[in-house]
Picture 1: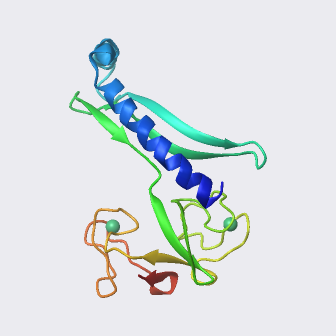
Picture 2: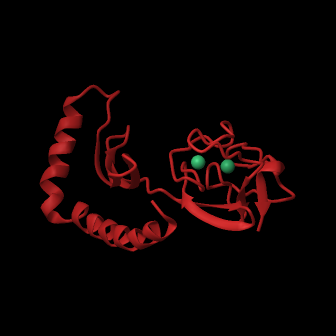
Length: 173
Ligand SMILES: [Zn+2]
Ligand SMILES: [Zn+2]
């Protein structure tokens, strides 16, 4: 997928996501929520249940799938129902002085799967290396690992998750 086609699909994904929210919270969905609760109440306490709506983009030429949205409802251990979100948040990179924006866990150069970049520093597909040809652009102080804590040039360890930035892998924006 190219940056452009991703950008284009983002708008539609947001629209679909909003409508899924309306649907999941509607009275029409109440029957399914009730049945979900009945099911979970019939199971041992150690089990929970998810209902997920997933949107993937399928690339027939490259034979791969790009997940764009995963949202639904889950049961908590307390027995309550809550909404779940797992949309692919964008991550910025700098390659050859140019900014590339791709979903997390994807390679900013070849757009193939590349998860756990901080540990696996080389893209398994095109061989680009984090910290060498490719750096993560941090232009906010949000921790790129947990997205909850704060991280900056002067505070390189996240107070929330304990993640430590490798200064060689990032460019501060
Ligand atoms: Zn790659
Ligand atoms: Zn963190």
